[in-house]
Image (cartoon, rainbow, N blue to C red; front, side, top):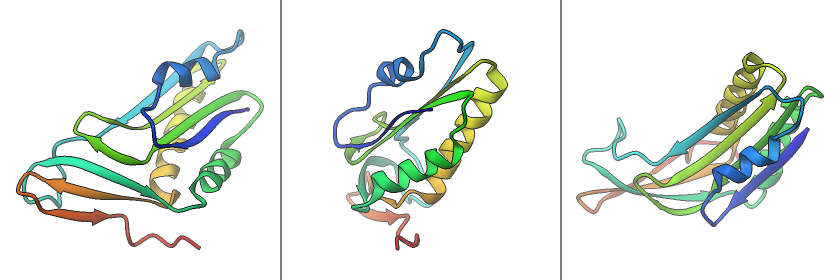
Length: 142
């Protein structure tokens, strides 16, 4: 079951994602919270902020990703943030519940990996020296 998919310009609520996948038969809820870090292998200095931009159809892409992973024995909730986020800001929340933990972990990891690889989302990375770079511009977004 797909409980929630969203591209949001407001802070993401981890507890709301957990609640969205809660169910009496769920013995496990796997949670992934992706945050902005102060470093990047391609950065010259410290990262101070990320600014996320999404393709106009990003919500549809996100829904399609989750739909392809949907099955009767799991519940999935995932949201990605757009806009400016400081170091420590929450960029993505993915929760998956299932009867057993292995399946919740496996599906959650696949959700996050697919979102990272397929969602048409770009980030402008600001560094401590005032410079910035764009990350993710190479993706095809047709």
